[in-house]
Figure 1 (cartoon, one colour):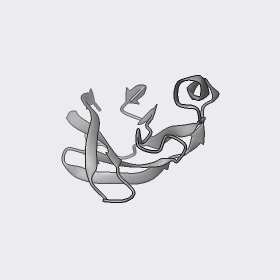
Figure 2 (cartoon, rainbow, N blue to C red):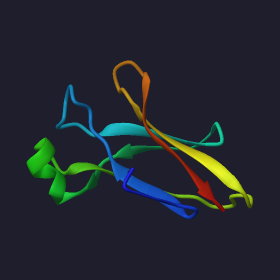
Figure 3 (cartoon, rainbow, N blue to C red):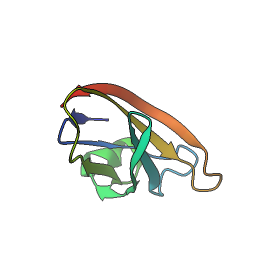
Figure 4 (cartoon, rainbow, N blue to C red):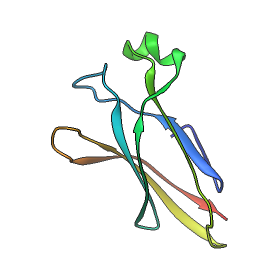
Length: 93
């Protein structure tokens, strides 16, 4: 998770078992799934690190009620569907 604001989140993720493939991302706010997407956007700065640039993601949030919200980002294993928590932070809307 590179950027988290009340307007959205962006970052990057990859599967260490197969770094050339993009990986699924699941986003939860306050325990509710708000987005499922693929970390497949191009970020050239990742190529020297991973060997492939297509691992970035971004999601916009809309309609967050005023107050503090817990945002959790998970990677989703394509083969098993198992989720792994990548990061969790709180934001204030």
